[in-house]
Length: 293
Image 1 (cartoon, one colour):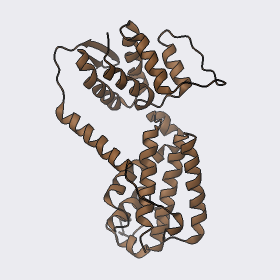
Image 2: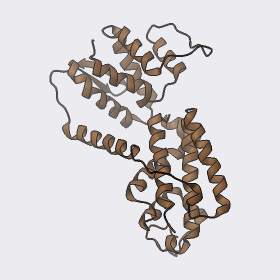
Image 3: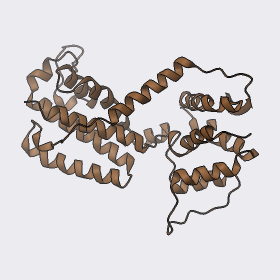
Image 4: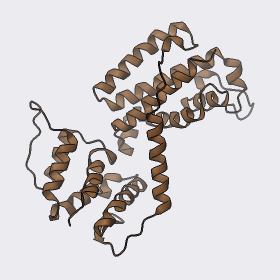
């Protein structure tokens, strides 16, 4: 099977980032399953991950190893409990592969590569995916200007702690410690929203979205609110805008992977794109909140 350059590019993205983030050592291990016999040398410079994967795919394109590569990538045993996500990865890849007159099919626990007799593109699904990507990219590209913890209308004693966390987040991003960065971003956003809620308790407690006791309809004290509660109420009372609310929930969901067993169960490995969205959420929230009095 010979793949076109566009299909190889999509395959590279799936290997490097989309199905999971594969570091240099992981990429070496992945391609060693296809007949390569390389060892990752921690004492020498590794080429860019994109170039490494591109070179390896180019060398096996048109050989049986390219078929094996796809089957390893989509092996159902690696997606236990996440078969819907696997099927989405396959569907996305097939949008490219179909132009090479091939398609990937998952038959229960088996991955099959078969000839495609006709090109049948799911236009609505493609539009939905493109719309989501466009929306994410537009949000990431927004410039929120200068953001400042000092300008937030919260207890001054909390500001040095939040400022230190912002510095640690920047360091984690620089060092590509993606999971650590996201966990810090989630806790920092929660701390900021708790500070805002505490300074505006009457407004937050009157909100429809404020969490309440089922029997008494009494609003929970703030120490029982979740990050989700803070996000929803902050938007309802116009402290943050709808776009920040929407993407804040993405950060909230990712922050939940602070629990190792949940991360293991769902095979979550955040990419740099994920970090970019989450960091933009935090900056956008600070930008909007620092103008509130």
